[in-house]
Amino acid sequence: MKTIDDSRKLNIVIVGASGDLARRKIFPALFALYCQGYLPDKFSIFGFARSKMDNQSFRDKITEHLTCRYAPGQECAERMDEFLAACSYLSGDYGDVEAFRRLKGEMDSVPSDSQPNCLFYMAVPPSVFLDVANSIGTAGMIYDESTEAWSRVVIEKPFGRDRASSDELTAKLGGVFTEEQIYRIDHYLGKEVVQNLLVLRFANLIFEPIWRREYISRVDISWSEDLDVAGRGGYFDEYGIIRDVMQNHLLQMLALIAMEPPAVLNARDIRDEKVKVLRSIAPIVMNNLVRGQYCAATVDGVEHIGYTEDDSVPSDSSTETYAAVILNIRNARWDGVPFFMRAGKGLAAKSTEISIYFRDVPGNMFCDAAGCPGVNKLKIRIQPDEAVILEINNKAPGLGFELTRQSLDLHYKNVFNEEIPDAYESLLIDVLQGEESLFIRHDELAAAWDIFTPILHAVEESGIKPELYDFGSNGPIAACEMFAEECGIKFDNDELRRERMSHKCDEQKHKGHLCVLASEKKFDELQTLVKDAKFVCFNCGRVAHDEGNLCNPMPLKG
Image (cartoon, rainbow, N blue to C red):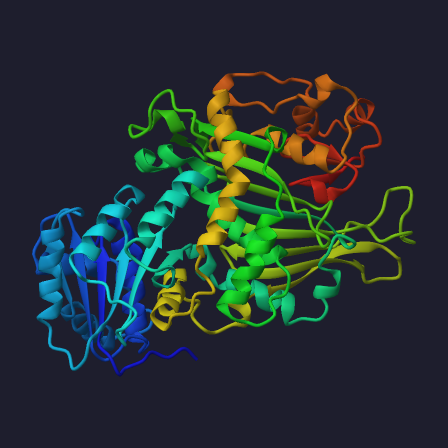
C-alpha cells in the first residue's frame, strides 16, 4: 500500500498548465490521487503558462477532464470542489524570472506550519525546458540539500534529439537541479502490465530458466496507432516515430524484458541492470532499419489524408511515421536472438504488445508430412485489453489424435476487480514518495541514445525518403521482408523477394503477385514460386516455414 507523508504541506507547480498534457493527463491523475487519499491533507496546485486567464477560467478548463472513477455519486462533486479550491493560476513567459518570482510570492502567501515540499512538473515543449529551469532556479524556488523539505522536477520526453543534444540538456539541467531531484518520465513505464514485467520474470520460477537464447528464438515489441498526427504535425515532424516512441517507450520495455535480475529490488539496482543491457545493444545499421510514411487511403468508407497533406506538416517532409528495426544484444543471455521492434501511426489497429517466441522442440515426435506443431509464444499485451497469454499445443478432445493451438490467458478485466490506474497516477505517486525505479537516469538515457544516434544521423545524411504505406494498413511491406530474412525465410529469386503489396498511394498493380495469389487462394501457383513453403500470410502474401513468422497465417494447401 503506497502512503504519503502528511506531516508537511505539498506545493505542486504545473508549468504549461493550459496545454493538452496538463489538462488531459496530469490534473486528472492528481484528482484521482486526491480522491484515493494519496495527497497530503494540506496541498496547493499552482498552474503556470503563457495563456492569460483568471482562476475560475482555469478551474473550468481543468474540470472538463476530471472523472469520478474513485468518487462516485454526490461524493464526486464534493471532492471536485475541494480539489479545485486548491488550484490557482498565474500567467507569464517561461523565460521571465520576474513572473516566476511572482509565482513564488503566491506560493509563499499560503500559510504553512513548516517549509512545504515542492514538485515542479514541466508539461512544456522540450525547446523551453532550460528557460523554465533557469527561471525557477534564479527565482530561488529550489531547496538545497540542507533543507528537510524536498524539491523535485518531472520532465517529459523527448530528452534531446541525439546523444550530443541529450548530454547538453542533462548538463544544463544539472546546473539548476541535482540528478536526485530530476525525474525523467516515460509514461509507458507507469502502465500496469509494464510494471508487471519484473514480477512475471522474477517471481515465477517457470520463466527465468528458459528466459535465454537456448530457448527463445526471437522477441517482438510492437506499438501501433490507428490515428494520424491529428494536427500535432508541427511537433511530430521535428522528431518522427523513432525519437518519439522507439528510443524511449519501446526501448524501456526491451530493457525490462532483457535485463539481468537486480541484486535488490530498489531503484539503483534496477536501473543499473537496465543500463548494462542497453550498453550491450549494438548500434543499428541501415540494413536493419525500415522507415515508412502513411499516405491517403479510404478505410471503412472514411477518407484519411496522407501525412504530408496535413496542414501542420511540410509537403516535402521525409519524417517517418513508421519504423521497424532489428536489435541485437551482445551478451551471454541473448547473443543471436533478434529483437524486432516496430512502431507506427496510421496503421490498422491500436495496440502495444510484446511477443516472445520460443524455439522448436528438438526432435519433435509430433512432426509429420504436414510439418511440425507451432512454437510456443508468450504474448504480453500492454494495451488495449491488458493481458498475458501463453500459446501452447494441445491434443484436441476426441477419439482421434489431432493437435490444436490453444491459449492460457490472463485477461486483466476478467480476473481483477480493481480499477487499473492511469500510468500518470502510478508515476506521480512514485515522484511524491521519492521512488525512482520507473524514471530514467542520466546514464540510462545516454546508453539509449548511443543505440539510435548513429542510424538517425545516417538517415539524415542520406536523404532517403521513407517508403509509403496506405493509412489503415499494416505498414510498409519492406518491414515484413526484413524480418522474414532475419528469420531465414528464403525466396526463389531477388525479383520475387522485392515484391511489394499494392499501395494506392503509388498506384501499383500487382495482378499475379504473391499478395494477390494469397487473397485468391491459388496455393498451387504459390508453391511453384517458393521453395518448401508451408504457410502464407493472407494479409501480404509473404510465405514461411513457420506460421509464427506471419501476421495472418494460413496453411499452404488446397
